[in-house]
Length: 560
Image (cartoon, rainbow, N blue to C red; front, top):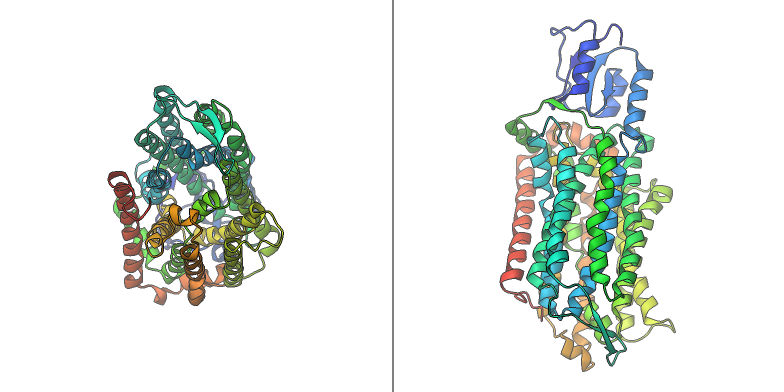
């Protein structure tokens, strides 16, 4: 660049590429420095002072628009060799989760696990999602060799792989087929050397920690890149990455279900989940991340994060997201009803989960193709109303009114459509989160927002289990044909799922609304930020408490 006057850097970590830009500048004036701070991309572009470089920002006077545009384009081209590791990381996360989720959904049944033990395994497998804020803060504060994401991404995959080795090497994962039961459900016998539930729980918990660590690193890289997108392209980077993850899940989840039917099914599935991440190493090696030369101190990062959450642009919409996810309470007795009363097999139960995952992927794509012009409020209003209607279908299935359809397809229309609706809401939620991410603490801030929705989901799961105590929805009651409690529980959960519609006014209409709230300093509230952080902290502690209680006292929340 010729005749460039560097104005200032935001209070963010200074990267290697920023220093390269600084050395190229031919005239630097400290007298003219002014604090630009974390101004949004559009306002800086309008002022003509934004000069973007990989993994950071530099603010300068100059007319090198073509150079800036080229740098931006290279950063957003995910299929370049230097960026390919980002979407491939999402792909392998989807592939591994697609293998594991169907396995832990049915394998405990063949091991003779109780409902409480099954709940413990599922809870511990999902618990690390509540720790994403800590993973993000960890990487922001402790760069390794100047790199904040790449080393931890590798560590995450190493942990995910190593944690599965004890299950693979120390236990017999074979299953012996037996005759079917009264519902023609194939029964399988686990050998004496089969893994114990404590071993499964601990290994899958640690493996899940590894997967979520690498997922947080990829999220941080995507958040950094997504901030460079033009208005018309908002959400493209995230849409590609989440679609790729959904594709990975859609590929391996039916494969996992098919493999499970073999005598060595669990062994093959876990072996694949162990070996697949090794294929990611070449893409990881070529992934480009610029070194942080002058990282922000922990105190500065905490201060930046505190200022961010105090903004009404953060605590108001994230408060709605928390409420929405927390009130999305499922019917915990539904799976037992499908298996005990309707005679659904393990394959059918897994098929419901697989198709739901595929439709969630279809929801993401549908939003990007057809619904981007909708306001966020309109999208969530439509989703909640439609979800309430489909939830009511459960009542018809309980009464046996399926209009001539097979119960499986009727249940599919209920469960899977809920995931499609959530899929349409995922991308706008993530676009909202990216626009709330300050420079320099991308990992911690974006992870804080995603942790908010995750811990709300964990709270929802706990509430769902606790509701089992209100009416008799036990297996014995269902076998005897007493479906009164199940009907009442279904009505209650449907009401809870539509309850957030009363608070839709907390949700902004669009990114422009968020930017107006963010730029208006009078909207900042320490009380709002404090309440938001306390709610998230309490929810994380609650998720950890539930996990420990499920281990120490299985069934304490009412499971059998």
